[in-house]
Amino acid sequence: MVAVVIGLGANIPSEHGTALQTLESSLGHIEDQLGQIIRRSPWYSSTPIGVLGQPDYVNGAVLIETKLEPTAILAQLHNIEHDLGRRRQGRWAARCIDLDLLVVEDLVLPSEAQWYEVADNVDPAAFLVEPIVPHPRLHKRLFALKPLQDVWPDWHHPLLAQDATTMISALEDEQVIHQL
Image 1 (cartoon, rainbow, N blue to C red):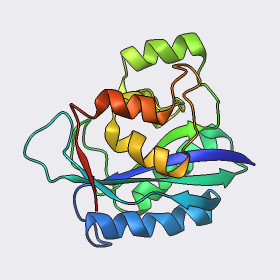
Image 2 (image 1 turned 90 degrees about the horizontal axis):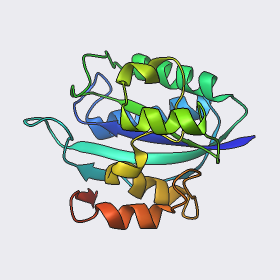
Image 3 (image 1 turned 45 degrees about the vertical axis):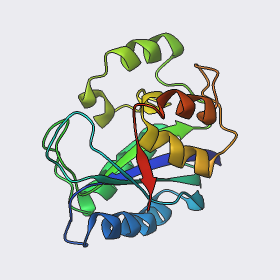
């Protein structure tokens, strides 16, 4: 079994209800298809990044234990998104569900050198087939780091050698999230 953190987000309703209701619905899918949820964060509200005029996001994270390999985890996350109504419409498009593979223990994929290259020049299409872990923008996003800290307080980034608290403190002046 391996410990995995999944980031959850949504900012528009789906056929399952509000963004929050869709996220709550995703938790059952995650347990059914990936593994037992060990911890879940509170839900947070955050302003969308990269675009104006969208509703705020609801974000959270879960820590699970799974037997699946990272590629299978990513495929299952995409299946869950599809089942809950997500249709990919562009990088900054509003979405009814967004499930991100944030962390797989201290694993680094594809490799340390490639991770740094990807983290600096991320092509969102790269996430559709092969996992990149830790998530290459995790350390730049308060809405992902705070829920991660809630579910795995002592996690350290395997390449940046920082814990979530340190990374959060570097972002708190420029990004704001509110616990719901």
